[in-house]
Amino acid sequence: MLKKSIISILTFWLTAHTTTLYAAAAPETAGQILARLSKLTPEQRQATLIEKAKAEGEVNFYSTLQAQQIEPFLQVFRKRYPFVKPVPTRVSGNRQLVRVQSEFNSGAHIVDVANGSPELAAGLRKLGMIDPYQSPQRDFYVAPSKDKDGYYTSFYVMPIVLGYNSQQVKRTEAPRNYEELALPKWKGNIMLDDEAIEWFAVMLRHLGREKGLQYMRAMAKQDLRMVRGRTAQSQLLAAGERAIAINVSGPTTLDLKAKGAPVDQVIVDPYFSQPNKMVLARHAPHPHAAALFIDWALSEEGQSTVTTFGRVSARKGVKQRFPELMEKEIFHADVEFISPIMEQMSKEFGQIFLGR
Image (tube, rainbow, N blue to C red; front, side, top):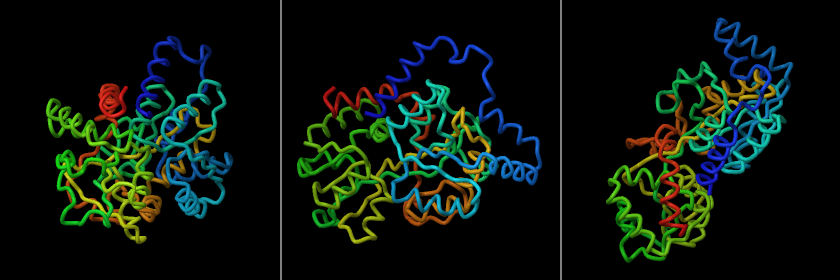
């Protein structure tokens, strides 16, 4: 499980490494190199970035975007900056953390830029694997889409909804809140992401700890089908495997519906989103190309590209593909919310739903 694995890795690292990885004077980090750009005018800054990015020639991007989304995204970047070759690697969750850590420990630094969940971003920061980068594009993002130190900015946000199979459940009969899912009528008809720690934590925040844990124990008796990943849940929902899916992506559900799949969604309280963060590797081998890539990804053009495949942009002024997902006030389960409680929430979720 992603959260448990991150916690284990953090614990091992912080207890085993009592001295810095580099005893000798360390080379400049990517963040230190890029910090010098702040002394330049906007025009000088962009000219310097382009000149040095041309010399570096490529940028290595570790991404959680779906495979069919990465290439269209990078096509637009290549058109804008044809002199930088983006090299994508689709790797998510615990696999991304383990891969970056392995590279970091061995000194074989490959990744320049990565995107991932708040848990992943928080883990990478605690392990010292990412650096701050104050992209000028961050001016178009409000808190909590960015942290004040510049370590992460929301590449996109993922509104979480209650999904249902529209052939099995009529719109008028769909659950109006999460509490209804504990009723006997839904037993054996519900799927839940087996890494739904954010949902678990947000529900406890919404209901109060005692009432929230009572609700979770009642839900654990509903013969849930535990599924790894929100996309997999949505696909199984469309296939009619279960009538209801908890903790699914609103954009993915609406995209499947637009393509004719028998799925629909309900926005219920507490309505929340999981932001996806863009980060700079501490020892990025192509720091200037990395900065150019991050600036573009967070720009209006980059974010408009993100919205074409259904992701929700956190940038002010960007037209959303599914504006209905942003019409209701939403709580962002960001790094600052989940990081301090991640270990406890992961443990309790595992005990209640996974029997460990």
